[in-house]
Amino acid sequence: MAVSNNTAYDFARFEPKRQEQAPEIQKNNVIPLPKEQIEKNARPRLHPLRVVSTLAVMLVILATVGSLVYGQVRLTELTDSINSTEKALSESESLYTQLQMKSDALMSLDSVEAYAEQNLGMQKAEKDQVEYISMAQEDQGTVLQDAGGQGILEQIWSWFQQLLS
Image (cartoon, rainbow, N blue to C red; front, side, top):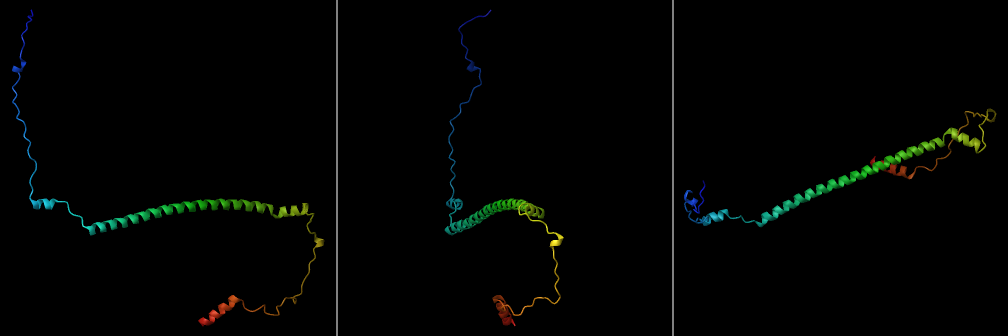
């Protein structure tokens, strides 16, 4: 049987005893350094001449890189321009070839003969319409006078040759 009563139990008595912790004292972490050590570890001062020379070298490097980039961009633009011009040239040559072929087709001997017969009423020459003439061996043309001497360029050339000889 269970007995119920009002008795309270103190369980803290059965727990192990805790030792009271003393409040921690903050230690001073600052280590005093001698003045020589402080000067030795101090940030070095910048020399004005060294700063100016460093900036000048950086500017030269930046200008060189900038000019290289500009040159490459310009080269790319010119290459694109050349490619587009070559493409236009190729297309123009193709068109020229097509038009030349059309022109040759229109101006062929057969088409000229057909045009002459149909539109102009012309006919081919027959054998009885052709006359041959013969010339004697003695007939030939001769030049009686010189046609005006030397030209201006020939005179300059002969003057130059006289100077050198």
